[in-house]
Structures are given as structure tokens and as C-alpha cells.
Length: 307
Image 1: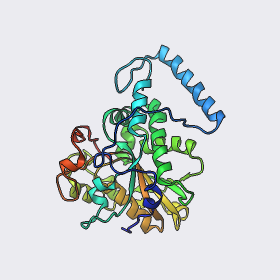
Image 2: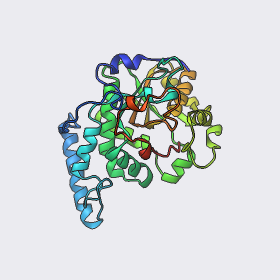
Image 3: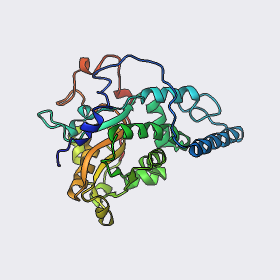
Image 4: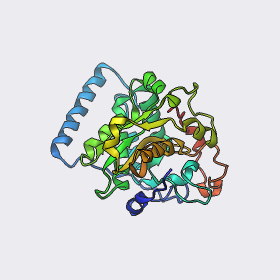
């Protein structure tokens, strides 16, 4: 896989370090406007009014705290904004994206750490089809994308494809739905859906990657992606950023970068909605417990990576 670090030049000015490695003082989250155009803001307000009316006919509860009438209540939405207010560089916690000498193979910007309301909302969105969460989660991802490519040097965003089993189970691809919200907020960046699973990636055993160490995850996804024949002309020679939902060991992102580089694309980095610790966080390439910071138990919230 080709070594790239271009994203660091643009993201380093805006994306801070991993908050578990360098904790920052907590402060209340402020409201962040999602739209620069009045028409889009009014459309979203009208959609919110429709959601309120539907809540009267079909009662819903907040996926985080259980409050009535909203899939995500105002307070929990504020907590998600707090957790994702400052995107950070997360590749240091992904062994597959660092070599034995500590050199970054693929820089990654994460919107937030996989914990608390962000983890609960993302799980509900992925596993239970809570589409109402798309605005909050997609908005957080858009902030991370903006932080990763502040200039106009990036040509396109490339989503990581879902496995056939995951798509059939859910009926949708979470990453693609989130990118629709990103495209609405960042219309200048094109989304090129050019990656697909190969036959090797489609014949995987049940259970996904849950419980596998970093070596098992890397072996499982090796050769599992390729660029569609019709999509090679869309990315060849162009600078692109890979988009995924959750970062664990980085094996999935590394495989996506390998497929894109092989097809002639210039992968400048990746952006994820949430970053967590790899399952073998005590192994080589992982920081010590003191370095990760005390009080951050990410393992109990680790997602079941099934793609």
C-alpha cells in the first residue's frame, strides 16, 4: 500500500490529537449552524415540524436517554455535538495504519471517540434503521470532512462499501446515507461510489470481525475490495478521501486504500465518524493505559464490525 500523508498538512491545523492521548478541558457545546443557505435551513425546519406531527401518531423515544417524542432529544443531540466538536487525528490507535517504526501509512481524521451518546446513536442508526439520526450523525461527519480537507485539493469522497450480508440484513448502507447529509452540507465535494466487495470478501464466515485480533482482521479483509471497472476513470489520478463509520484496527481502511491505489487513485487520507480502540489494544502499536488516559473504557462500547 502506498504511503500517504497529505491529509496531515491540511488537517494538522484544524484536527487536534487523539483526546485519549492528550485530554482537553471540557466545556459546554455551542450551537453550530449546519447550513449556509436560508432555503436549506427552512427546509430542515419544515422537516422537523413534520417529525413532531408524526411523533403524535407514532410515539418514539430518544435512543440515548429514552425521552419521549424524538429519536434523539435536544439534550442528547447537544451531547453528540460536544463529543464531535473537535475532530482529531486517530490513526495512532489503529495498528493497521502504522508501520513498526511508527510511520503513518494512512492518516485518519475522526469526528469523535466511540463512546456515550455518539456510540448509542450510531448503533441505533446502523442496527435499527433510525433514519432520524442521519442529520445529527451526518452533520458530525461533515465537520470532520471539512477539517480533513480545508482547501480544494481533494477531488472526491469514496465510501467504504457494506458487505452483501450486512446490506441484506439492514436494507441500507449506513456510510452512504451519512454521505448524503455530508453532500448536502458540503456540495463542493463529489461522492464517488466506486469501491465494491470482491467474491473473496463476499464469502466470509458469519460473525463479522467481532472478537478478531488485528492480524485476524487484516487477513479477513485482505483482497476483499476493488474499484469497479466503470469507476476507475472517475478516480484515476484524482485525490480522494475514504469515508467509513467506525475505525477499529484500521484493516478495512487499509484495504480500501490498497484497492484505490491499485486503480491509480491518489488516497490522501480517510475520515470516520467515530474511532475506538483495537481489540488487542495492549499489543504492539497501542499506547499504554496511562497514555490513553484514565476513565476512558472504550472496549465496553466497541461495535460489532460486520463489514
